[in-house]
Length: 481
Image 1 (cartoon, rainbow, N blue to C red):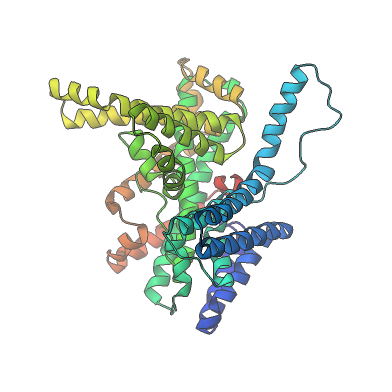
Image 2 (cartoon, rainbow, N blue to C red; image 1 turned 30 degrees about the vertical axis):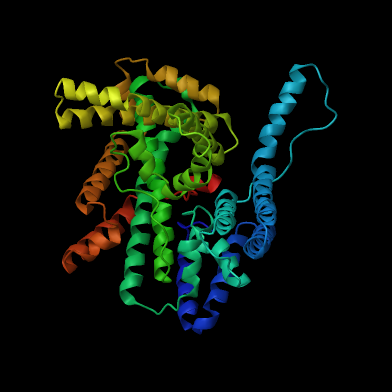
């Protein structure tokens, strides 16, 4: 069930209405039923994967907490990790590695009597809920949280529908404990949630899907475009994926807010205005980045504190981050590039600072240089993320450094001049608004405005949705992961 569908706009009010009419002690049960229905709307059979993962991690966490020996704790921890990674490997990575092995054997002259491919559909949201449940059992093992003894509420933590399919990836110490609260209907809280939902829908169907029309044309035929057209498509895609994913997150946070639940922040407002890759990744997909930091990078960093080891561990962590997004070489390269860019920043930080101080470079110039480098490298690496394969990515990168006078005209007519100007104008509008918000969420910022200003904003957004929204319904980009 897509957040930008009529089905969801019927589903959410119905869930909220029944939720607040249900006696407090049974509300968790209604939310669990609604969450299971939400997931089964896509594919009923894959609900058994979530149920299986839920039961394994529920029992493993209790055994870890009750175990008297460290070895027994480790045993059940690894059972949980193996079960979750086994699900991920089978459904997401088996065909990738099987294809690589098959190609290698065929290149060596081997004749295979069977295929190493599984004819299975990737379960939507599997990368998110497996990471969430793994974090839970690891935190129980580390003593950061206590195991949830109520199976129903733990199942709700795993399947809570606003964030089930594409996050935020919640930690148990934030989300799980909230299902023990007795929420009452609060008009102000519901309005805040609806504001977030409205803003998220605007970013998705007015900005992201409109930018996608330009981006898709370039990436479908990478040989046909060069220079400024490729760079424009790359920049547009950076904004498209931001608006698409942060738009989804706004709808998720807003939906949960209507029900009284607070989900974690996942994006900074002006993440595309950065002066370093470190700052970019501190504000981009925050819950995933912090997951890899806490459960991959920090454990690796404990083995050796030397700079070379820490940088190698960081690059490896980003390669895994790229692999999490998909079983394709393009994602591995994208992750590795981002890791290398951050490693380069770390190595050059001291000499860069000395250079600035020696030549008394003004702060404004430093920020401008930092932005130009970070934004340029981000747009270069994002080509691998969006391209269908490595060959297409290399073609686009090679073509991006080829310039011809016709390219500016080719860029603006690719979707027609009006659409191009409208896309640029929408990006500027969003950035100006984010600048005015000064780090606040849209619901918080609107709450501080006068009533007439809020209604002018609502009317403007509704008109944009009505007249500028892309009519073709498209799923959110991160549903693929």
